[in-house]
Image: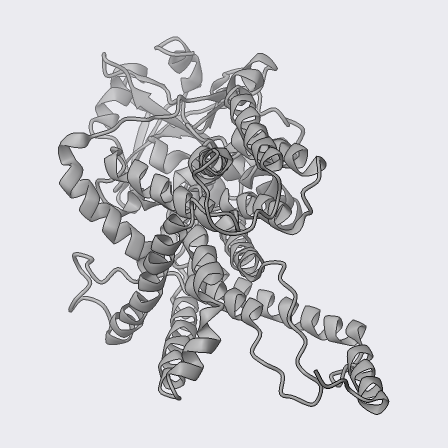
Length: 560
């Protein structure tokens, strides 16, 4: 073997200690500046697209909860939350935004943009991995950087949500935000050495997330436990080098199990401490509609990746540009499906723990959604929203390294194809940001009520919270439902019992009519409170006004 001479060795050492691009600090500063600029652009685009979808009473209820926490009710005493509290996920985020901007519907739009921007950035970091770039040979060209190819692929797959998926990915808390701490947990596992404290921190983080949203059982805890348990079985894993001991992976699995058990007690613990009451988590299945569920699940998968070309009103009803952009996204959905197959094939081999775990998590999410009662229409795709970041990271880790080799093997023709796809994704991002913002759904009603001196009243659920938030808290509208005797009672879902207390509030009107009103609500209001003193018609709504505090009668009419 020929040995290099002293001059050559000195030249090689000089290359190893100097950088033609500048100092490491300068390089890091440039990269940080570019990352901040990219994050700002993404945030603006997602914020604009979020504003194109109307805010419902579900998201408005979360804003009101965060506002109450911000003003001292940290345990949400007297509150009835839905089957998912988001207490440790989105609610702290909403508190921060509300503290800076005040109470209003913009809290949800800003939070949604922040959440999705973080998801894109975290997916890119996680897909890139901790693999350092191999230094080029002295005097030779710098080769492509596979880690950055992975990061760009993952971020690109999530870059431009389909417009019809705005209400799922860029609006109220619907499990999308839970993927942010989930990816952060996986960054901890992926970037940390196998030390004793990693399973401890992993378990604590999983328990924290589980307290706010139990969907993490399907997206993180159960997949990690299954993969680690399988890899620990002697004789099952035959190929690859073990990056960590079997004991370490079993410790991760044990911490995840402990977190799942501890997190499952969070609702009862909060109630025992005098905090919120949480509705039971529904786990109903409908195997009788398995064929329909499979079709909806397939469409939901495409919807999440911006590629649903099978929507009932898609062809001929959408602008030509949107049709083209959605069709281009099919390439991304196919890439994720391919990566999913590769990930499942790697379950029984040591190596990257993240790849098989993410593949199992995607399969569990798709399977659970397919047999659930949520798989009736595409709105239920919120239950499997984590499939988007999980699939993007999986594709980046599995396929990103192959992109440079594919470009070389394709002898030039693949570069124009990739350029068209990149241009299509960027155009879709801009197209979403260019959509017109819709006004708050209850803003006109709130303005009318304020103009007529009506400050506290009752309405059906889908009108109550949204009117309160759209009025910036100047109008208090509490949700009511009908009992078996058709009398009005407090509605115990995303509502505060304190708002029904006649000692604190003087409610003297009921809003009926409109697109979200309960059938027969006007009759039930008269049955409960008697004939109103005045009745107004405004903007499609009927506003019934009494000269008494309706809450005194409401409190004795049914549920407390």
